[in-house]
Image (cartoon, rainbow, N blue to C red):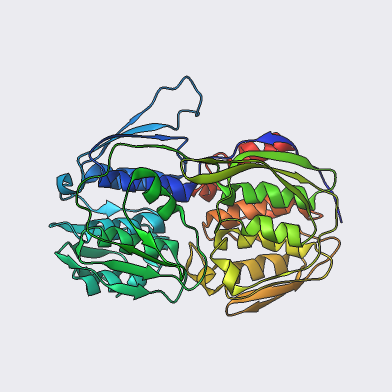
Length: 433
C-alpha cells in the first residue's frame, strides 16, 4: 500500500445532521422554549432553520463560553396550532431531509405552503412521501415535473393510514409519523429492514407518544397537547466521522480518536464494515445522552484490509457512507462489493455512476451495476486523475481523502460543496495530518 502521510490526533466531529434536523423540526411540536446543544453547522440544517423561521419559530444562539463552538441554539416555538402560513417559498436548498420532514409536518396544517430547493433537490424524488400524504388527505400540486419540487402542499384534515414501505427510509417514516400526529385515528408505518431510529429515540426523549411492534411497525395517534419544553445534546455525526475512520484505516501508522460519536443502532454500517475488513477499530467509553448512544472511536492504521460485501439489508444503516467505504475497497486485499444500493442514484448526484467513473479513472478495477458496484482491491492506486463531484458533498470529501491514499493527488472538481454537511472538513482533515 502506498503511503503518502498518516493521520494522528483527537477530533470531535460536528453534531449529527439527522438528529439536528429533527431537534429543530420537532420543536414545532412543543410550545415554549427548547435548547439544542452542539447543532450541526451543515448548510442543510440552516435550511431547516430558515424554513421554520418562516413558519413562526424563533432561533437565538446560546452563549455558552465556547463550550459548543457557538453551535447551540434556543428555539422558541408557538406549537403546532400556532404555526403561521409562510409568506414566501419554503426553500429547502440542498436538503432532502428538510423538504420531506416539513411536508409531513405541514400536511395537517390549515394553510398552503410552496416548497422548492436547488437544482439538485429538484431532481430528487418526492412522490414516495407526497403520495402517502395525499392518501391521508393532503392536497399536492406540482409545478413542473410530477413527483418533484417545486410543489404546493395544502394542509387538510388528515385521516390515519397504515403504510408498509418498500424501502427502509427514515425520512419517509418520519414525515408520515409527523402527519400522523395530526390525523384522526391511528397512523402506522412498517419498515422492511432496519433504518436509523433517531425519530423514535427523540420522540421518547421529548415525550411524543408512540408504540413500536416487533415487526418494525411504529404507530402514532393525534397529539392531544403540545409536548413539553426540552433540551437536546446532539452527538457527533458518524457520517462525518466515517471519512476520518476510513482514512486512518487505509493509511499506515495512523492513530486517531474521534470523540462523542453517535453509535445508535441503524447508523453503524461504517463500523461494522471496517471491522469485517479487519481494521484495528475500537469503540470506547460507550454511554447514552438524550436517548442516543454515543462513544469514542479509535482507529489504528497499518493492516491490509480484506474484501467484503455490503448487502441491501445493510444499506439503510449507512447509505451516505458508501462513497468513502468504496475507498477502503479500492485498497483491500480481495473483492469489495456493494449491492442493493439503488438509492444512491437519487442523492445529490447519481453517486453510483460517479463512484464508478472516479475510481476507474484513478486506476481501480471496478464494475458498475444498477444497484451497486464491485471492485478488486489493489495494493496501490495510481491516482492523479480528475475527480468529479457534481457538487455532491460526500464525493467532495471522499475525493480529498482519496488524494491522501492514492499514489498521486487527485484533480478535484471542487471542494466547496462539503459545506452542505461539514463546512470545516478540510481544516479538520489537515489538523490530523
